[in-house]
Length: 365
Image (cartoon, rainbow, N blue to C red; front, side, top):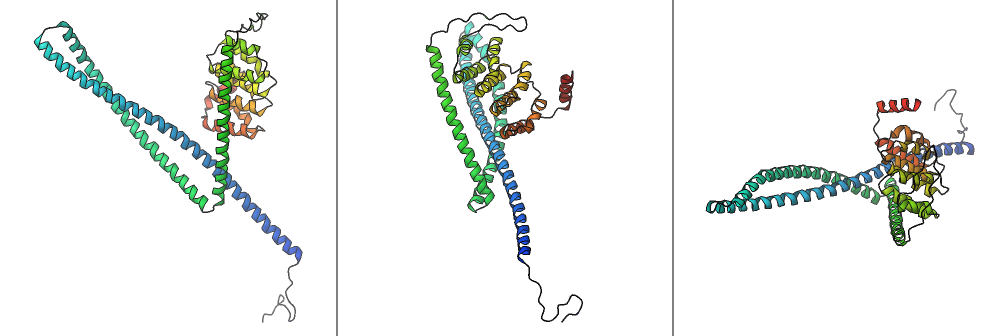
């Protein structure tokens, strides 16, 4: 039996924890569990992002693999054709040499000389095709190895799903939602193509619209008259859906000042779908034009997130734009999809300090 100032006297028991102490302990434990749950959710989000990136890489590698396979097939066909042509040339040369020895026909001699000149060229083409085929085979082997690695990772993930891993189950649900979204986009794309075909038939069958009066000349920026039927139909269209279809069709045709001046007024349209289509069309018409930067700056300040997404994609598809100073403010955009698109574009855009300094000096001047 212990003795001392902290020893319990005989007949005195230790105090039992009260209800408040138990509540405090349970709250502490609950906070710990909440922290662990938040960490698990963060890890699950990171796993979802990694899986989405892996799926995107797999799709890209698959597309590149199919392209390389087509190139290898074409190279093989070309090599086989060259071999057949070479054999035919050799046979024809032997035949012509025999005829040349028997008769001194001038035409046969010229044909023989021509064929002898073609033989080295054909051999060089065969050698180049064989070298290209070798390089394509090596690239094909690399893509097949990468595909095998991705498939192995997918099999491991499926095994984790079968074993009841909660993160893998969450990833499976996320992939299912992505597949449903892809199917919805494909369905919308098919509907849009059908509407475009119907509208094209209506435009082809319709009577040409009446000639519009010439615009009043302005000393600042004179607008040219409509250059073709598409521009005239866009000027006469009143339905927002028709305007969207015509704007997209104008963006797919060759550029020109007439199309630019016809599309530009629609960036201030009331319907956000019309504004988005106008920015997308201008992005294609002004792909290498300096006027596109001012339009992009105006479009990323639009109040509708759908319009801002279209403007960001149009800027990313253009050439010659300094994307980082243009899109950097959109990292704090209120729309999460806009932030996600901008973040992905900026991550894929190399950082160029000299170009950035030049852009800053240009904006300051």
